Length: 236
Image 1 (cartoon, helix red, strand yellow):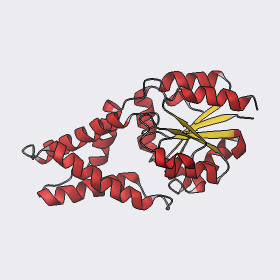
Image 2 (cartoon, rainbow, N blue to C red):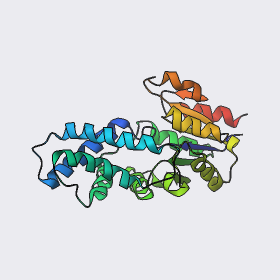
Image 3 (cartoon, one colour):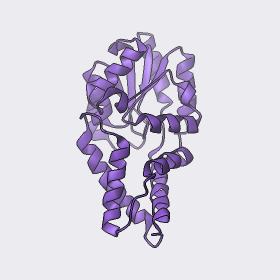
């Protein structure tokens, strides 16, 4: 019987569009601090995203390294091309911008509350530094809604390594078959969850990941659809 629902964070509870705006403003603030507002912050944001994505792709399933260091390195590579310095407080700028511009999916809050009203353990399993996720959840006003938050920093590994999932289950005192995991990345979220025996739910609002749906047990276009899946599994 289902007893818990765990969520990924970026792209699952908060929108990728909001994350893009956040990162654009990070780059804009960096250029302002560096006295290089002559540069096109959107162009540099695109380069920063490319560097960051490449670095994180290499880390999938690997031992944890601080995300603040990865993000700073991505920004440093861009800055080097354009001959300016990355501010010493780059990470503080990053966290502050995430607090300011992060946006939940429209049905996220209602979905979380409904699942909790059903008596389920509601948690987060995310590739994140602890200070980032705590600050972000508090800024969104949802920190206290979660029964547990498990990060790659806690587990010492990045998804799809089994450790983040197993640690979350240990903290909740649950068996894998008693939980489902909701994420937006078929390769990291669905595969990682299924490898430890958890059912997986893919959030794919625009159906762009159809070729990888086979990795997942369920596919939804809205977070609110998770409620019906949960109710069905609670009755089994």
